[in-house]
Image (tube, rainbow, N blue to C red; front, side, top):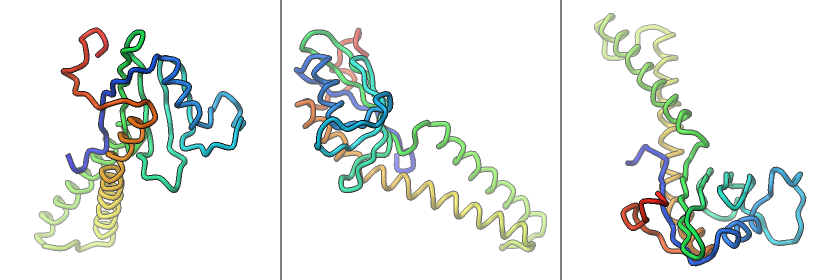
Length: 177
């Protein structure tokens, strides 16, 4: 969907759970490590990483990556499935809030137009409502467009990082879904 800036993707890798986490730690400023850099390797993310899951926010300016990524490292031994959830916002509730605000503004604007039997706003508050509607819609469209452009490169980055391949949900064993 064009305006839905979230995607879940399974990746299958032959690395073990600890190797997946170590590869990710090398590219992350860890929030629980008090922002200390241990080497001169460029950092792409800020967040938390463990051998079970991770929560990341992109801080790289020179690479097209989505803004937020959370994930779970599932599997056993050398058959690891990583579920990554990419998003333009950290939580889906922010997206829902934008959609609800757009719908509310639209309903109030339509109500105003019907009440005044007009094709354009007749009062200053109605014009402000229209401007708010345009600003909210523009913000949502810009975030969604940016997300759609960087989604494929983010998945490719994680595939390269973990020597993984994208798989569908049906290809993942039921116990690891």
